[in-house]
Length: 536
Ligand code: ADP
Image 1 (cartoon, rainbow, N blue to C red):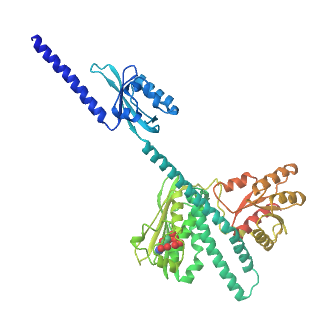
Image 2: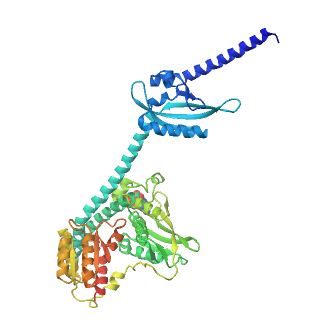
Image 3: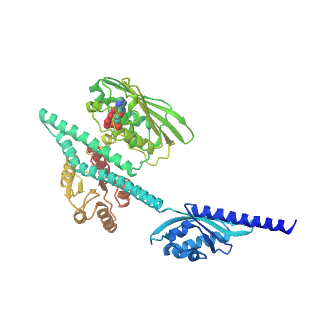
C-alpha cells in the first residue's frame, strides 16, 4: 500500500472516531436525563448537557469528585458508600439522593450506574443515568400519608362505634334490667302488656346495638374466638328451640334434620357458631310468611383430626332476586328496601355472619330464587375432640335452671356490689334481692377496698371500668390484703366491653369469673348461684 493510501485510511479512521464521538455527544446532550461517565479510577470524566444545565455548573467544576459538592449533606456519605462499594465489586447500582438544582432547590434524583468495559474486556469505569423523581417521591409520600390517614380514620370509626355502642348499652342495661324485674312483679294485665312492649322494644334496640358493637369489633380486629368443646347437634337443637314460640305465631313449620354421623364432641367457638345459625334462622323466619323453615346439618368431610360441617337453613319465603346477590353480605345493605321496611332490620346480620364464618376459616353463601324461598348455608371445619380428657367444656344451655336449686346454698349471702353507675347499681341490687341475696353497694374502688376490709362478704361483683381506682386495680388490692388472712372471696367482674383480652385481663387481675353487660338475668343468676354455692 502506498503512503498516500495509508494516510487516506488514517484520515478515514480519524473521521470515523470523530463522527462516532460527535454522535455520542449529540445523543448524550439531547437525552432528557442526566448522563455521566467515570474512569477506572472512579473519578468522573463526563457529564451531559442535562446534568450541567440542571446543576448550573461547568464541566470542569463537576469532573473528578466535583459533582459531590451538589449532593445534599445528609445523603452524601450514603451515596459515596454505595458508589464505592459498587465500584469495588463492579456491580450495577441504583441510589437515590437530593441534588442541588441551579436555582438552589434540592431535587430527588434516582441514579443508575453500570460498569463498562473496553473491547479487550478490561474495566473502563462506569456509565450512569439519572432521573428527577421528586414528583414521584412526593406522590409516594402523599399516598403513604393518605393510606395512613385512611387506616387511622377506619380505626377511629371502629373505636367511635364501639364507644358509642358502649355508651348506649349502659343506660339500655338499666332499661332492660328494670323491665325484667318489673315484668316479674305482680302487675295488672294492662300493665303487664305495657311492660312486655317496653321489654320487646328494649330487646330489639339491644340487638341492634349488639350488632353494631360486634361489627365494629370485627372491623377493628378486636374480636377473638373463644374455643370450647361442644356437641354440634345439641347446639343446633338448642338454637332451633329458641324459635319455637316465634314460628307458632307466624304459622311456620320449623324442623331440624341432623345427620347421625356428626361427631358428638368438637372444639370451636360455640357462641359464634350459634350466633351465625341464629341469624340465618331469624332471617328465614322473618322473610317467610307461613310455610317451612328447615335446618339441615351434614358432614361434608372428615379426617383424623377435623370434621367439616355444613349447616343449611332453607325457607319457603320471599326469596332474593339475583340482582341483590352482590349486596347481601355487605354491611348496612338489604336486598330490597321496600321489603325490609316491611320486615325491619339493619342489614348488618349477614355481614357479621360472613365475617364470623371467615374468622372460623369457613365459607358462607346462599341459593335463592325471587319469590321461591332461599337456602343459606355455612361450612366450617371443627377440630374433633375425643371423649376425654376435657379441657373446657361449654356449659349446657339449661345450666341456669338446673343449678338454681334454692335452699341448698347459704341463706342471704352477703354480696358487695362495686359499680359507679347509679342506675346499673340499682339494677344489680334489685336483681340480687330477687334471688335472695343481701347486697351492699359502693360506687368506687377505694370504697370497695375499705368496706371489704371492714365487713365480711361471700362474693364481690366488680365493675371493670370505673373512674378513680378501676375494677382490676381494686381486685389486685383486695387479693393482696387477702394474702395476710389466707382467705379467697370470689370476685366476679362486670364488663361492658367484652373485647379481645378482657377475659384474660379479669383473670389476671385475680377475678374468678365475669358477667358481661348488658346483664342477662339468667346468666347473672347462674353465675351468682355457682359461686355462692362454693362459699357454703
Ligand atoms: P337484616 O337485619 O336487614 O335482616 P341481614 O344482613 O341479615 O340484615 O340481611 C340482609 C338482607 O338480605 C335482608 O334485608 C334481606 O333483604 C335479605 N335476606 C336475608 N336472608 C333472607 C332470606 N332468608 N330470605 C329473603 N331475603 C333474605
